Length: 636
Image (tube, rainbow, N blue to C red; front, side):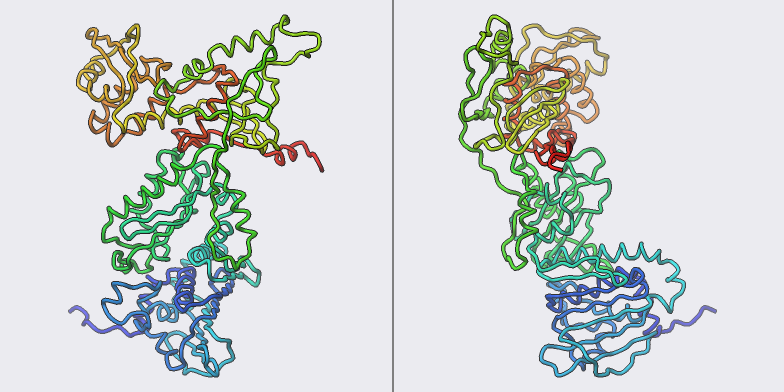
C-alpha cells in the first residue's frame, strides 16, 4: 500500500524552496541587496565572513520595517510590493514574491533589525531552524540590518556542496558588483573578513562602470543610447579589440534587473559579429528599459531569466542599437580613455552622465604640397586633405592610391639623386619633410605617415605620439565597408577586363558558374564557360581591380556552392563580401609611397568600424610619448 498524501510542515517547505532560491551564499546576498534597493536605500554596507558561509550582514538606510511587520516579513509569500495579479504583471521592484527572507531563515540563523524613519526605537526578531523568537527592542539607526549566520547549518547534505570560502566569496562579489552597477546612485561598501574590498561612492553611470569594469573597458567603451517603440537601450559597449575569452564581463539589465537571456546574448553577439575576432566574447554594460507589462520576470526561481512579450522586436532593437554604436567607431576618433579618466575623478555629486566616448570633429585641412628640389614637403602648418569616400567609385585597391599620386614616386626618386642636391642643401631622404609635432594644431587623428616597416606596417606620427597601422587589415576593412555600401545599393561597379583571365575548373565549379550567374553578377563578377574544364573571368568589381581574378572567382564559387545563390546573398552576405575584401586588400610587402600611406590613413578616419579588420583583429595601435619615454626610462 502506498503512503498517504499529507501536507508538509511549513519549515520543511521553506527548506525545499531555499534549495531553489538560495543555492549558495551569493544568492542570499542578492535577495538581501534587492530588498535594500526596493526600500529606497541610498547607502548599503555588506559584511561577509568566510565567503558568506559563516556570515552575511547587510545594513541599509532605507524605509525600514514596522515592528508589527517584522515577524510577518519572515513568513512565506508575505510582501508589501504587490497586492493583485495586475500588480504582478506590472511589477517594478526587484523583489515581489515574498519568499526570499523566509527561505534564507529556513537554512540559517537569521537576525532582522529595523527602524522605520520617525520611529522611537528599533525592533529585532531572531529566526533559527524554523523557530521565530518574539520581537525585542534594539539599538539601531533608521534603516534595516539583516544578519545571516551559518548558511545551511541545519542541512548538512546541502552544505557539503558549497565550495571553498574563496570561491563562494567570488560569487558574492559578483552579485554585489551587479547590483552596484545597476544602481550607481547608491553608496555601497563591501567588506570581507573585516577588509574593505569595495567602497563605492554615489556616482554617475559612467563613473560606476569605469570603477567596476576597469580602465581598459572604460578607455575603449562606446556609448549606446537608442529609443524606439517604447524601448530604451543605454549603457556602454566594450571595444571589439578587448574581446574576452569568457562571458564574465557581460552585464545586461532589464528595468534595473540583471538577467541572462539567450535572446539578448544572441542580439548583442550578432551586432559584434562583424568586428569580433573568432571565438572571443564582447564585454558590455547595457540597460534595457521597457513597460513592465511587456516582460515577464516571474519565469525563474532566482529571477535571472525573463520572457519578452515581443521577443523578435526586442531582439531587432538591441541588435540595431549596438550595431549602430559599433559602426560609429572610426580609427583615430578621440579615445574615450581621457573622458573616462575625467569621469572617475569627477565629484560624486555630479548628476549628469559623463560620456565614456568623446566626440571628434575633424578640423579644416589644406592639401599637402611638394616643394621644389627637396622631396615631398608639407605646408608650414602641416595639414592633410581628407580623401573623399566618393573616390571609391574609381576603385578602392592600392592601384587607386597609386593613380591618385601618379608621378610622386618618380619625383621622390629624382629628389634623392645627386644632381638634385646643391652644396647648400644637405643630403636628406625623400621623407625628410617637416613632420607634425605634438604641439601642431589641426592634426588628423592618425597623423601623418613617417615610413613603412617591413612592407607590413605603416608608422605615423600624430599629436600624441606614434601610430602603427597594419596596412592590409586597415585596407581590408575599407574595401569591405565600401563593398557593403555598394551591395546594399545594388550598385557594385563592374570593371571589364581587357584580357579575360582563364583558369582550370572542375565540373562542380563550372555548374556553379552557370547556375549562379545572377548572384555572381550581383557581386560584380562575370564568368564565362570556355569548356568542360575551364572558366574565364570577364569582369570583376572595380574596387577589387588589383586582386587576382582567378582565386577571387574560385572563392566566390565555393561560397555559392555551399550556401546557394539567394541564401548566400542574404544570410551570408557579410561573409561573401569579407572574402572579396580580403582578396582585394593591399598585400604585405607592397611598397607604398608617403602620399599613398597618408591617403590610407585618411580613409581609415572616414570609414566605419575601421578600428578592426573583417576578422576582428585591430588595424592600428598607438604609443603615446609618455609610453615611449617609459620604454627608454626618460625622466627616471
